[in-house]
Structures are given as C-alpha cells and as structure tokens.
Length: 640
Image 1 (tube, one colour):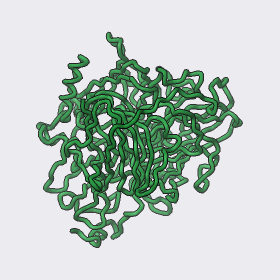
Image 2 (image 1 turned 30 degrees about the vertical axis):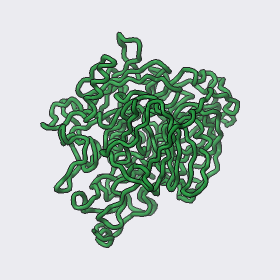
Image 3 (image 1 turned 90 degrees about the vertical axis):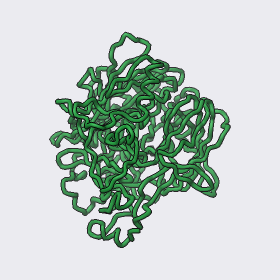
Image 4 (image 1 turned 135 degrees about the vertical axis):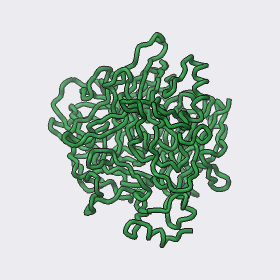
C-alpha cells in the first residue's frame, strides 16, 4: 500500500487536487505553459455554422438511400478568424471532398426508407501511411489494442513497465445513436477496423474481434460485402421521427475519437409520428445549402474543448492532469498513466465554432439541441446578461416538443434546459416580440466539473464556460406560418405495455487498491446481489432479455456522480427515481416521451421501461465517454 503521505509527496509541488473533479480554476491562476487562455478568445465574432445536408450517392439500388462516408484529418477554423486553425478529424462524403467537416454534415433520412452507409477509415497521409492519433491514447485500458494481434485485440494488455501513448494506426467504428437496427449495423465497440494503410506494422490486428462475424452476416443478408478498411451498415428507419446523431464507438477510444471531431446529426423525418413543415418553424437546411444559410430549424451540438496556443486541441496526456498524481502508474500501481476519470474543456464550442452568434428574425425558431460533451452536463438558459451573477432569470422560455425518441406527448415550457452528455432536446424559441437589435445569450449554469444534481454546486465560470452563444435579433424577412408552441398538438404517443420482468443493475466506482487517497481507477457497471457486484467488460453477459420482452431496469447508482445511461438500439420510458430508502418521484415533465439516454442520480434508483424487439448483441453504458472507455460499458444479448 502506498500511503496518502507518499501520494501527496508525488503530486506536483506536494499538493493534490482531489475535491473539485473539474477544470482548473483560472481566476488569478497562471495559464499552463502552451495553453490558450479561454478568457482571451474573442466571443460572438463568428457566425454559427448551420450543418449542411450530407449528399447521397447514386446507385442502381433505389430501395435505400446510399452514402459513402469517410473519416479524414484536416484543418478547420474553430477559433475566431485570425487565430490558428485546428487540426481535427471529421466525417464527409468520399465522393464530395468539400463535405468533410466537424461536426459532420447532417444525414437526412425518411421514415421507413432504409439508409445504407459505407463507412471508410481514411486516416492516412498523402503517401498512404497511417496517421497517428491527434490525442494521447492510453494503452493500459481494456481497449481495441491493435498491437495485440488476433489473440490480444480487444483486451487489457499486461505491461512490465509503464508504457507511453499509443502512436500506431487508429481504429474506428461508427454508432448511430438512437437508431433501431440489427447488431451488425450498431457500431459494436469490438467491430472496429484500421485504415488500409501501406505501413501497418507486422502482427497488428486490422479489425476487431466481432468485425468478421458481422461482416459475414451482413453480406449473407444484404448482399453487400465489407472491404478492408470499411464497413457497410443498414439503417431501417422503422421508428418515430427523431433527432439522432452518429459518432465513433471504438472500444476504449471513444472519448478520443469523438473529441477529435467524429460526430454528426442524423435527422429522421416523416411518418405518422412527425408533423408537417408548415406547423413547425422552418425551413431546415437542404442538400446544396451553404453553411450559413438562413434556416429556422437548426441542429445545435454543444461541446467543450481546450486549445493550445498553436490552435491544436488539448486533451490530457497524463493522469497527473486530473489529481496531480505523478506515479507510479501501471504496473507499479493500479492507476493508468494517461486515462482521466472525467474531462472538462475550458472553451465552449457550438457546431464546430467557439462562442458563435446567430442572427434571428422576430419569429419562432426550432433548435435541435445535442449535448456532445465528453463529461460536461449542460443547464441552458436564454438571458440578457451573460456575465451576471448566477443563477440568472430566463429572458425567454424553451418550449420542448421532443426528446431522443421523438415528440413528447405535449409541449413543455421550461426556463432552463438540462442536458446530460448524449441527450437531445427538440425545442421552439419564440423571438417574435423582440425589436430588431435585441441581443440575447445562451448560457450554461451547470458546474465546471462533476454533476450530481446538487443545486448548491457552483455554476460554470460566467466569463468562459458559463457562456455558450449569442442571438442577435434583426429585421423580419418573411412571415412566420408556424403554430405557437402552446397551441401545438403533437403526434399521438403510445406508451409501452406492462413489464414482465424487473432487472436490477448497478453503477459503481473502483478506487485504487494500492494508493491510499487516490481517485477512481475505473468506473463500472454491475448487478445487484444484495449489494452492487461489479462486472467487467470481459465478464460473461448477465443481461439477456428475450425478444419481445418488456422489462423494467432498476439502475442503482452507488457512486457520487450522476451518469447518463444509454441502452443501444432501443427506446425506453422513464418510470421514476427513488432515493435510497425513500419514496419514489415521477420523471421530469420533459422525460415523458421516449428516450435512449437517462440521467441516473447518485444514491438513487432510476427505473426505465424497455422493450427489446430484435435479437442480437448490443451494449449499454454510461455516456460520460471517459467512463465508457474504462469499464462503464457492458454487452447485453437479446435472445430469440
């Protein structure tokens, strides 16, 4: 056992930051060498980028919309003009090179019309050699592990000395978050694949342990073989119209691949669960529209990032960034040398631009919000003074009309909008009564650190991460024919039937067994056997619902953090939340529709009702990406 005295002595300057689990305080403190001061980044000088629509490709098969979408490395102006550009990764249409962007162009899909995407790993340089990761990869986690070869891939390697960051070829696999698809099109974390590079080292695994199984099954069913360096997925779109998104899901590397830029919207429209466009604010972007087209329906992804002075993305390269512990690391202890339990950026980025502004007309707008942060929760408000002492009174309400699974049973008026990582909110904001020249601000009052749902927690820094974007009202340019949100009749909502089984699962945190006083070495899922029993990713599957079963999952959170829990390829309903040994309370008003991600608060039981309607191998996990990447993800199998 390493004592707390030894632990403290190992920290920088003999002190350790263990209590805040948030971003370093900048007020009065020196900015770390090489890092950009977020307070010095100009705000509201860059127009909001409205993601254009991803172009499809022509095909002899007209039974599905066809896309060929690659992943490439490029430079993008994220910081204001005059600042250095940032090297990022992004998705784009392989046959339309100008479409590569971060966030990606939006895939527009139609209910009950399938979409087929060939996803291509193009992370190679001009000579065809692989590109190493932009960010520090920790090879001590249970991860994709290409150097392990066929026998050691998708494993937690054993080291005789502390390794440095992995610098080899980068695996990817894309998950459509919110989809309702077969397991071979889910983006299973062990179905990754490397690029077709010229210089893959001998002995490296070029694909994950599930890749070949899914490739064979897909080819036999759909007649489309997978080529090395790519995968073909089919999305049936047999579900309610909804706001979905796609992002990387590689085992043990999701946090890094998404932070590098691999995310984009997927909007499903049409069918009986949608509303015609004149009823809701519009128009939305269409194929061929420019980035800054004047739209009244806008997808908005909010992410936090940190930047070095050269404009590059900064992500911690050492566990020392989290708690100032400088080692010993694996194998000298049980702490990984690079993995951080959470990460909170110092700058707010919206649709790939830091602190942008959006000109709006005095009319209603529809915003499809997505919290795309790795760890940060968001509590959004529209206010008149962005630097006022928190909490601030809302100047305009949000009218939430939809969540992850489509429209709510009825519109809900909200002064604040709470979004955990991966949650979405379809909202209407009415600027109609505001004179031209009015300026409003979208702010964030959630903490600069771990979210626990505690109203006493200090809000985000009003000078930086407490601000998100600006709205500027301009003269009207046309008539608004949309229906006022309080007068809207939303599509009919059919709740799930009675559950036939209750399944109890656990959220757990494992602290160091050898270093007294250190923070978590991993965050885990588990089962309830009297108390929480931790289960590792590699342990046998314990959740095996039958096809057609409706189950209530009781999520017992034994940790100090709130966790956004996502179950792949299903939609569920929130039932209630119950503090340990107390009375249950109903879900929030904005949680009355279908969801795919739910907040599980600390020391509570969160209940969801789920219908499992297709057989296959899937996963459920916490969508704090740092947690997901280090054991807070488990496979589940639907039997049938």
